[in-house]
Length: 401
Image (tube, rainbow, N blue to C red; front, side, top):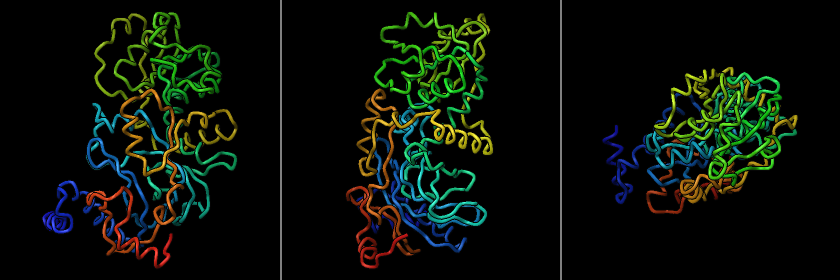
């Protein structure tokens, strides 16, 4: 099958390298097989995909309409996880998914179709676990109703909220617990707000600089400490719980300095590289416990509970994520955004892709088994332009989802 597909690719796009195009053709074929087996129709939306190092395309992606237990969502907003997505784009250690990969994992939108047994109706506002795309089909267990007084922009951070909430759970915070948060990225700032919400004493937020310190962060922490000029004061913090949320190899060493005797270090970030400077002797002498808090250890049912808790905190205004959004990006500007993100990790706290900025036919449109895959970028075309024949038929027929 791969040999036949490779021959077809060479005939259709002679200027492209078959090995680069083949994964997209195979994905297109598997989607059609799935549609036949399920006896369901197909829709095409726009999705972000990284086909090779340093590139990010917006490209047509086909999905099979939902069956029982699944939900089709028209995504309005998808949230960027700056640390993770920067690491993937730069191919940092422990962050090298195989090409092509589809970035993102947290979004919000409106239900278009709901399979049997989901308990959801078309038109419902939901948050969900999904990559950056205008359309998503997800299992109902990964789709969460959004309260009426919570915006879809806020709800789109649901998976980031789950990451932070489960770290707070692992920390076992009590009223008045002295807390330090190392890192002022998205997860770090949500952690500081959550710790304050449960009554902890958030004594400091520690980062290389205070460029990303937002109003909600300044409101809940007693002091901002920058490693560029205030590192001498870290040892005096004597935190009972220190959250490490930088994702940098040296972050855990900084957390150790901040933590007092008998304290706990909660690893809320995903470290990109090897920590080479760490005093295990000090860890043992001061009886400090290191707690892993990666989301991979959380069960699906627990993730659902945490997601609902996050949305409830937003509804009750115990958590404020809207001021953390520093950029709102058109999907067709994705590559430019990722290149800026890769060049510097100090400028972006939170960012969202706004899928409602696409024209309706690029957000969702019916396609057929014989509709060819969108390989426009391989032909040197502008990102996210549809194959000419399919686009013309769409405009003539007025098909829509």
